[in-house]
Length: 104
Image 1 (tube, rainbow, N blue to C red):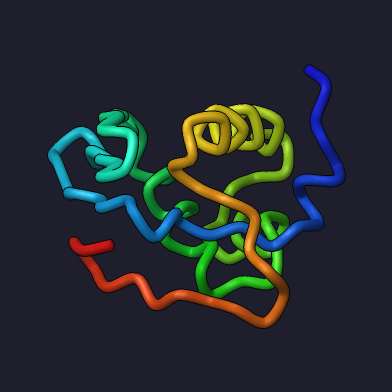
Image 2 (image 1 turned 60 degrees about the vertical axis):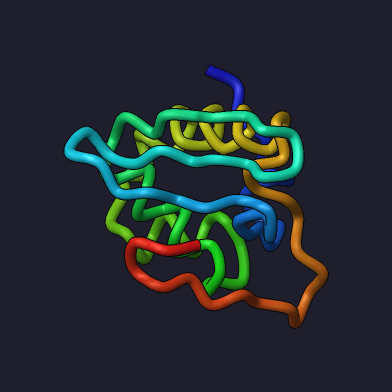
């Protein structure tokens, strides 16, 4: 599987218009701007998305949440899907958002 190494080295964050709601299966992400609803079906993916705000890049978020490097391509693909629907967006360096547990 091909992986975008550029994305791994870029700072990303949850879009300001998105709220994450914890669910037994992971979380629901709702975008208040485009009204898109996305289901994050893996708790580890939810952890990675939440970690984006406090990490300098996606690579660091994956490392901080304990995702094995062999699984990074799958997580990058999932994050690319979230980026395509504006659930996450590239962050201007130096700007980090605080994400509280259960609230975006």
